[in-house]
Length: 489
Image (cartoon, rainbow, N blue to C red; front, side):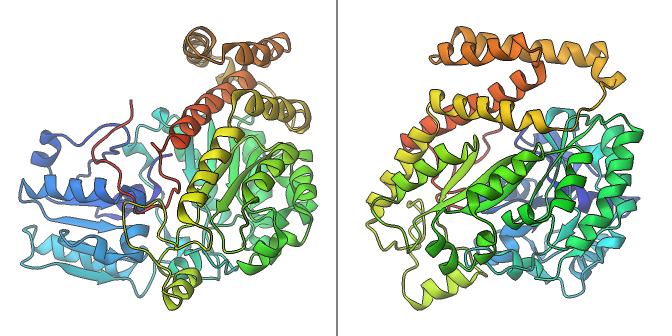
């Protein structure tokens, strides 16, 4: 997805400031970029820390002032000692102060300046992110932020600490305007609502959905939508039905663990408002695939937790699960508890900063085994086969829009099919499994399902193989530093 925060800041800057946007997931910033600039703004998450510090170093070689904002610096300002300006918190008075300072003087300050937001800009006053600066066609997903904050206080989560428990929201009119802008910029695939919890304010979600339905009808359902929500959405059929009508196809749910005792310990009791498997099947019945977050290394884990998790994966039939080792984040109740118990480990060569109750090597080995087994090609494709037969079949039957039938879109699909058939069907080491699935899709004329399932499956299989051999971090929040300046192919 495009970096939403940076594009929002770009739109908020004075109209007279020329802005250039670089996403180093796509290409590294060049010498010409730095020579063109008068100041550099950087944002990212903890796992991109080394990359951000490297950008700062490169910018300083050109004597440019560098400001950093976003979730990582807001939680851990001390991670970024070299930056000239630290922007802590959301869009607000700190942003205005930063703009005012740079308007007066674009030279580097004598010492680091920390600016902290006290008065946030209401989300109803947010500008449309500068999607036009990003090459949106090069991204797998578009994204929109509808709300900020979450009413729940899960022990491991830093969202309430960073953004509050009272969800703040944009108006439906703002969301429609952002969808229009994304479409104008060339995004015609899936748009992900990046909110911490789409139903954090259920009334607001119900108010928004009719506007999305109307917009989809007007434009021939050209967009597919996805979001993140708590599993108790399964108890809200009135929301699920409207989401189906609006062409939502995926819901990310932080299931975390199938163990009720563990859920209670982490203060995620709301996941038990409905039996987990029943909740997943309910969401599937409205045509929406569940993507699940899973955490290993909890205090309640036992030596056989890995086996229980693999059994859950098989029974739930969820194809995509983000399985992470527990990581204690600053500004969370978990961090505070482990600090009191002297169980925080700051060795950045480890995959987790938590001193587990089980032996560390045993927990990491269990995680590697779960990744290896869960994403064996045969098992993964069996889960995807279940999805297309019993979940995708429940999706809204939408008309084929003129954009979908255009030669430009057909050519794009043919290129993707060519790449999939060559890389997986010919050169892949699991091609027999692939062709069994692919031929069943081709016989039904389901080219879209063939492309989306096999492309994601290939990524998951390669990622899991790297993970099980220790080449991937065991947590998306891990402090184990990655190399800097490694743009994607």
